[in-house]
Image (tube, rainbow over all chains, first blue to last red; front, side, top):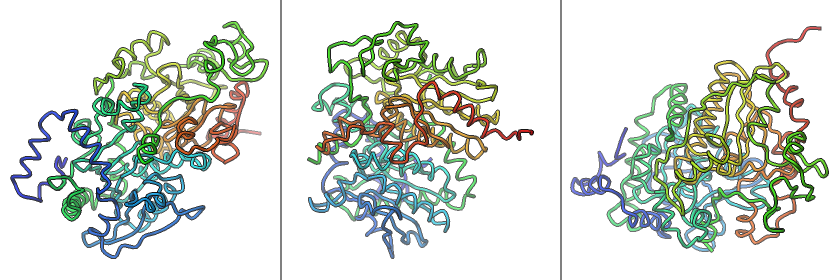
Length: 292
Length: 289
């Protein structure tokens, strides 16, 4: 397991040691909440900020070939590390207009159907698949339900479980529940240092269990959505470091660190025969969970 | 706006549009929430917990569901010893451990799912049956594990898997590990399919959120009970987010059928013969004559 993802090959030693120390220390409730805030920071780099910096010759692919082009999910092809890869990533908007167009990164079933079509395209042409996860959750709306949100999320995971090409995912902001896992059934799942990965938003959890959405901090402290806990629980394979003050302060630096980690993770699984990839990917998720 | 949308983006809560308490205080569990007919326990059991006046389907305990579906004496429970742990030492208003103990005491179940081998009309099959009365049928690590064991047992014996779901979604008290039960169960269904096995998914009220967004939706055939809520997000959260007036049949089986998400809606007394017919169709045996 690559505990630190790309950190082995990047950055100055001092900063790496600092990070290691931080990870070994018990994560405090305040640090968990800081992750929640940074994961949602309006200046945090989004999928397209990374695409611009990491992929050459990027061609965006649009539409689910049935109904719509859901702009909360970006899909396309590009060159990464000297070869063609397929990319799928959630995209939040930067300003109000773009946020509305992109539905705040909350996809409809049409978005997941577009993602599935690009997963299958990757499989047909033997392109490794990179996915970047950054969503508060799948969109909770009437037409989303009518068009089969639950089924789309289930089938998207099933397509990933069946794919014969290497898949590397990274949670780059909010890894919000079903909307996130729909594109994160991968051979290597990474998480940026200040990203969060959770089954429900802190506010949603607080509203249900504490009957008060204002208790979000308490809820976050209880269900521990931060990267270090995700790693400890065996849910992710590595943590991708961010620039010292967070990815939002230095998009170029964040992209460089993410690129190195993705490349390393990809190299670990690249060249594995399709049936072995599938078997090991499924076996990895088979082991997840802690029961008595 | 953003915060509010973010907050409502993910929902594992259990909601019913016709919550009985909301109408007139505490309704007795044997009183029909739809027409207020009241039944004795044995009457309800005899009618498969369907209101004989209006057809309302009451929740059905896993034990009664199994007794109805399996040939008498054929059910052999598997993975009965799998129990939930408390990996996060989760504490909201009460400790998760206490909620688990209480659920076990109240329901007599070890978890929100019961799995095992059985025959139905003499066809070998595997049964996986959820019980909503155990912590809202929520899926944590133990539920995921037991469902996966059911898939594995079905593969081993080359038998179709019949899954009955009733769940509010993922179990929040297990945090991210409960979300991971989605891909875990999905991978198990894919293994089952690769082995040539069939999954028949029966969605009872409610089949929502994480269970709808994983194995329940992957059935080769999907059937629903009448007026069951089958939605990824519950009506309350959708309403809060969109501020639209919801259609009367929002998320219900009937709406799902109209939009093409389920193959059939079956009253409970027709479920068993329907499943028997499917088991015959999926069996590899050729019939003579």
